[in-house]
Length: 127
Image 1 (spheres, helix red, strand yellow):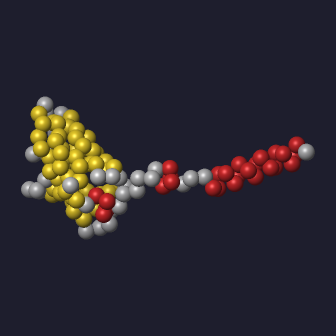
Image 2 (cartoon, rainbow, N blue to C red):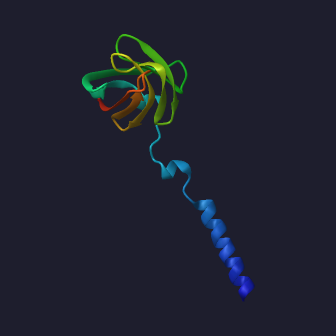
């Protein structure tokens, strides 16, 4: 009887493992290039001051690329699902920054810093 119970438990554990949620079911935030595209506006705080932020995100030449622009200059960035890494010359505010941008629905949260290490943060909305 003990062997039967142990085998039954083992089979149940294996079945549960095989039918468990995959990564996409646990994190239902799946972002493709088309999810990012749009115009985003809001107010950002950086270097002790606030400024209006308008960003334009367009499609890059590859499926996993977007072009982020402040209307004057643009930067091609690689998508990592709902996040992109901002390199040191990404034009977000009126000056370039580096950091991370995270998309959640129509909200784009930016956490960045200037070349002097000054932190900048804002959440802007797709218009």
